Length: 235
Image (cartoon, rainbow, N blue to C red; front, side):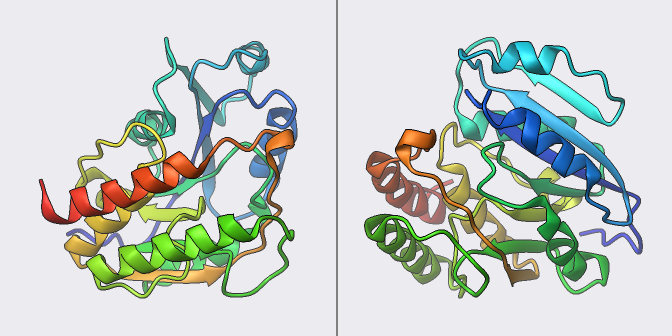
């Protein structure tokens, strides 16, 4: 697999669904962080119904690409659309809900920029400040990560993290299928099979509860188990 000696552009891919209360706050934070590279923000609206689409339609910044799904297709589908439209040599996933801080980008990118890593995961469990919320969500994340590690032979601490960084040629070599939240276990199992160099770096985390718009639930946890088995043992 090709390993570019240097990088010129970072593509930040942001899937969005019903985030009118946060979208206008997260966009300037993404655009203003200095990473030493040209940046583009690729936003994919997954058929929001709360006015988010109207906000995005008014954006007029050459650094931003916006794509509107004609129907709700799921976070995984939004990410696939964004990855296809990304033109940078490095791609970073950013949620629109303010749980993850764009000021972490330099630390996330460093293992790729200095030639150590092909993929970087930002771990909420290594260190760093985080909002105290749900025990069962924490336990569920740890169980899913452990199960994924058992089948992938990795030693990740946070498989379900939003912050994932990829060299673009890695993403181009993966055929992603998951439509909803199955993206996390799918991409993890598939990069494990590719034997690429994976790093983790600690990140902070400002989680939100369901009254603040959190969408993932216990059904998605059971689905993640299915996806881990599916992508480990079946093509």
